[in-house]
Length: 561
Image 1 (cartoon, helix red, strand yellow):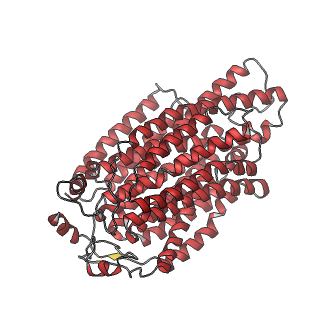
Image 2: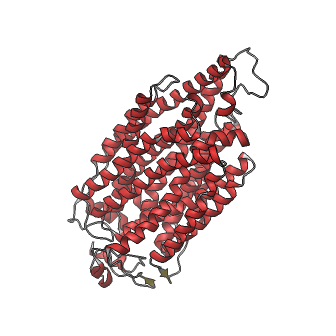
Image 3: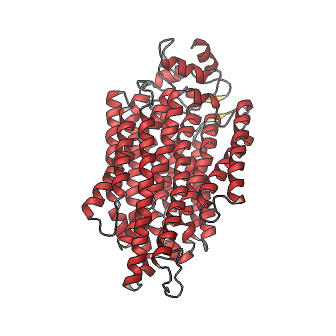
């Protein structure tokens, strides 16, 4: 450990300040020594007021990125009715998630190398540009492309905020602060669908994107005033080739899952080609990372069991969560016949459950110094919630639907931030950014795959249901038997016999989506039991000291090699 720490002290570090350890950070007496070789530590955070001002800036960034994941949901049916392209509906969400996911490791690595404030601000600007042009879209293709630009900025906002808090707060105290991050996700999930519904009903769906502009302007100002600046005079080597290979591999595999069985047959040359390309690119990525001077995703991290297991759990949770939740507003508007505003209100149970469990789990973790029980219980609750939602139908009662969504939300809230916290506690400070981004990457890529896979399942099931119900039956002019050009407004103007057939076909397709998600949730539950528990430390700057020969010491040594 002494040798490893000596090596660490030669590495530049962008911030080690903590409210509880200002002097140790200044003198190098804490767990993270003062950096050498040109890095400059920003002014210390010396009181709670300054810390909460910084937290306000970080929460605004999280709010921007997370709000845009949810505000679109209630507007999707109206967007489809205006721009068309219902068969590509899931790509409005997938494009954002995919761009955010692919860029996450890059944001984390650049933050480790050059400091996080400037990257945080750049991410805000990219996000706002994407929002402005997304709101001006005139076709579904344009909207999907501009959502990808938003996702690029959103990935930087989330990963920078999560890593900056690890610079300022010891692991044991991070629970209450990262609980606030989870709560912000919950609040945005509540406010997002409501705002989306209000904009659709009273202004235009385009305002679900334009609303980001004033919020982003405030975030830029607060960030400029609150976050300490850092600079690094050492020249670094950026892993461009690894970044490109990872982006191309991820894109190939997500395109495969989205287009397979919908645009192209599963056995078609296009789908087989995407699969082969994805595998080849992944192999190339692994080879490049083994020889890269500063890899975008160091393979040594996978020797740390906490990182590997947390990444696997995050992937499966993201797969089940994002893949299922995107269809709830569609169910409420198409099957239950509510307007966008009411569908946002009826999503409150899942968001309320997420908010409640996120805050409570964060506080309990800070009190106990332990975290493993929360992913275990959370994945179990999530699986139960998905199973309950597999019984949705046009006749489902409000109580049953509310309870099902609440259980799902409680499960999700108890898992997401805890996995990031566990990873940050298990790795050395020098790799805090790339480890945090790696854990977030696997959750996000799971969400991208889940949204694409469940979107394909839903589209195929809906097409089959409609073909079976309306075989030989003439449909009104302009109405497709695949349902690709159907909006809630058009649906509820149809003759009752045709409308009821479409509603039941939608409901049956959504039941299939939630039912398929249940075993995926159970896989996450099984993996959560494998998560090692390392007691949370009380100092900033990396993992707490461990006795030689202990599991924690061995894992930390693997990362420091």
